[in-house]
Amino acid sequence: MTFSRVSGPGALPGAVTSTQWGVFSEGGFAVGTTYRATPSRAGFWFSPSYLDFTGQDFNLVFYGYIEGSKFACSGSVILQGQTDASAVTLTFSRVSGSGTLPSAVTTGQDGLWIQSGFQQGTTYRVTPGKANWFFAPASQDFSGGGPLPSTFRGHTNSSVDSWNLY
Image 1 (spheres, rainbow, N blue to C red):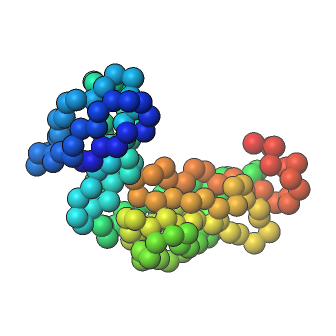
Image 2: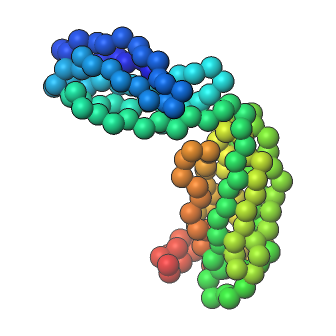
């Protein structure tokens, strides 16, 4: 863990190494100074990538992921006025990174979908599609360790005013 000063005149403590359980302890942080803690370890990436803190008492939590590890993603689709939300196709593309690109999936009657094989360190975009249907939002971006997509809402009217029906 390395530390940098964001603001204030306080002294800057040196880097520390965590225990095998990821716990670290360091002193010398001055009240009234804002510091930034940045974790690092070869072969891992962290979420968040850094945290800012002030004062002498702090509790920082970072989640470490093995580079190249995989995760699953799931979500739901609601079709306005329909009890059957099946056959909506969810396609995936890369926004950034070079992780594997899983194939498209379709929703079941309940509107639920799930896909696996997404790679940590890559940001993906999921886009719903069904003939003669429009969706809000039109797509959503996600990555491992971040928020997963929320519900897509579909309707058959392309008018912007119809987005307010929900």
